[in-house]
View 1 (cartoon, rainbow, N blue to C red):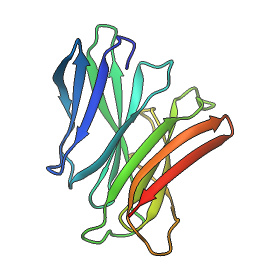
View 2: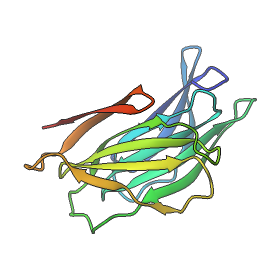
View 3: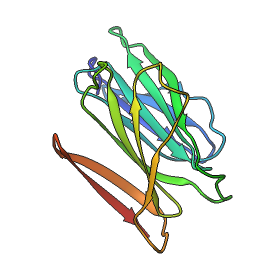
View 4: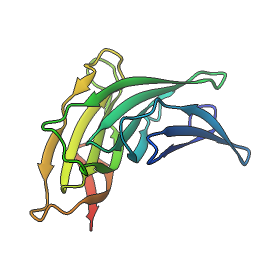
Length: 177
């Protein structure tokens, strides 16, 4: 929910599209469609600082792609979406290698006054991709994730969720097959 009080719904599809819908007074209305991605969309999420009129959209899917967008809502309710960046791949992904799950939470505002978000994504080889993304327009177009494995058997990660327990502690829950 943004300052205008309307709720937003984000959907991703196997046909490579990501759509944003507005929910107001019991009505669902299509608002924006992001540019199509190179491969399927498997996971989407929105993270917003409570004091902000902007938010971070995270989109993950085929070919280990993670893309990040900034969504802004003006006082009159107009919505704009700007492509911020995407992640660099450490290696060429296998044909069926994809991101299956993503979750993002807002971090404290950084020393430059920019909103940052912690993004956690899980892939089909059982690896986690941890990325810090700012809502600033001056960051590099390609950013690096910290990748680590939690599962020796490399079972696909199908869901992730993070919760801030305190200013110093974040709990991540991860589900696989």
